[in-house]
Image (cartoon, rainbow, N blue to C red; front, side, top):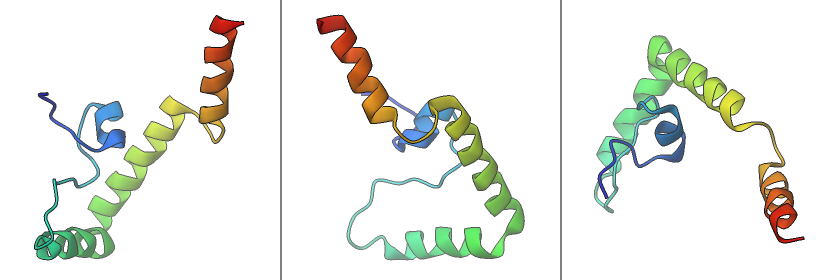
Length: 77
């Protein structure tokens, strides 16, 4: 599989705005760095929040699983 994003929200957005990496147990330094960047860098944090709000508008609000199940049932029944 060839994809530029592995994180679901980045894949839906078609661009990376949430830091992502295939993790191994010893990658805690990368994770700590990314967290520190989001906490201390207001520009990066606001870009991440804006991206998450964009995704929310694309995929909808809570209850998506129930909506998907209802849609699937409508094809069966």
